[in-house]
Amino acid sequence: MAADLAIAGLAIDVRGLNKSFGTKHVVRNLSLQVRSGEIFGFLGPNGSGKTTSIRMLCGLLTPDSGEGSCLGHDVIRETPAIKREVGYMTQKFSLWDDLTIRENLDFVARMYGMRNRREKVGAALDKLGLASRSDQLAGSLSGGWKQRLSLAACMLHEPKLLLLDEPTAGVDPKARREFWDEIHRLAGTGITVLVSTHYMDEAERCHRLAYLAYGRLLASGTAREVVASQQLFGYSVSDGDLAGLSAELAAELTREPGVEQVTAFGNALHVIGRDRGLLDALAARRRSATQRWEPMEPGLEDVFIGLMRGVEDNFQ
Image (cartoon, rainbow, N blue to C red; front, side, top):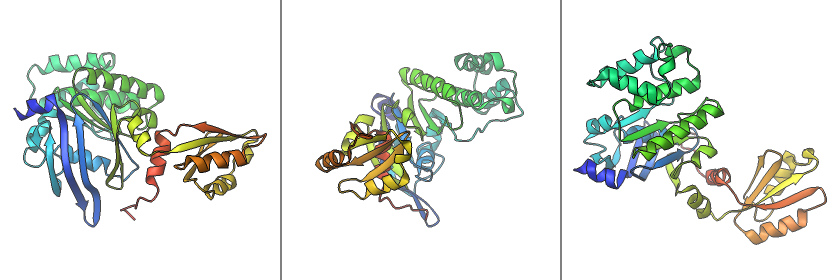
């Protein structure tokens, strides 16, 4: 009954999760709600606690404190039930290089004790476009094909929740796009997906997202809500002479009243702050025949750079 309730409402509902390793407090009071059937993005720098959080949610790590449920099962007392209903794709390719694609999937199916194993493996090969390569050794696959194989292995036991830990790291843009098309297809069938990523374009493809830094949840909501919550304003500064957009200019602008961050984006600088009046005055004063100041809407990357300012690194 609990799992049925989770499917109808929240796939993940946890409060106050904490995890430490020695003296390092890796996850601090994490509270998170993920709706059934949505794609939820986990963002944050290396060491932010994303992987540790994912492992607590799927029952591989026990929280030091806190409470909650995953697919209606208690994250502390009912971890075996969670593991049976979750597919977890790790950052590093974790299947066997010296087995073929088919042999890898067959081995995973054996581990789950699946009936009709041959039919299920065949269906997985077809769904992920792996059938034509089924006899190829996994160790000879490119990053994109290893990614497909890993996803196929995660889906063999028909999980209700997918936990994907930076699944597109190191693959080319075409493979990334194809992977995300597949994620949206799976979500359309009712599967819940929690995915960690470093890529802002991928974050914008999530229904909702959360940003972690050094174990703390700093912001959550839709991409639009996260950006709006920070109440940032900005200007894009460009110059006909690219040498004019130097580190010296960026440092100089950072010292101006109302400027909270200056970041290079391609051939322009993003000048961001919360006081629109001060930024408008700065733009009017600095604008010239060669230096263009154009109003801009700050994006997710601007927001996340801003969120990192003043956050203490708990690994230092």
